[in-house]
Length: 187
Image (cartoon, rainbow, N blue to C red; front, side, top):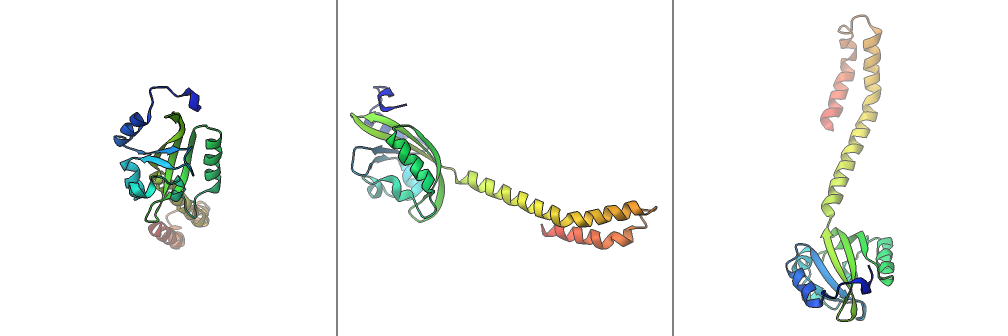
């Protein structure tokens, strides 16, 4: 989708009116202004980032970047804008208070008032990151627990299969069972 492919019915007023009622963060950047400045942000954007409208209008969106923002994501966005093509990327951004959030960013090239713009749609996807991090942590803990328990389980298995009366062997393996119980309770 390039600028010339956009329908003529889209105009600045219809875009900003839509943004005022949109449930996601929405921005509009005029590429022909110095530093590709923001010309519109909706209330969702302001709530998500913690900025006031007066603080962001006329500025480039790079104020959302911080020390851990991926340079490759920034370069991908920059190169896509130079090529006038849509952008879809997850990027680590920062709120005004310094808290980070994962921004699922979609940028769409538009021609409005005969000027090149990019419409930005942003979704805070931090909850997806948090979910993956928790799941990875649980899987890592389970894996570590398995590695620690495996030798004890093997010893129990050997003892049970080496005696004629498995119940009589219980007294021999009770320390191993108690150790396993401690591992499981601590996990």
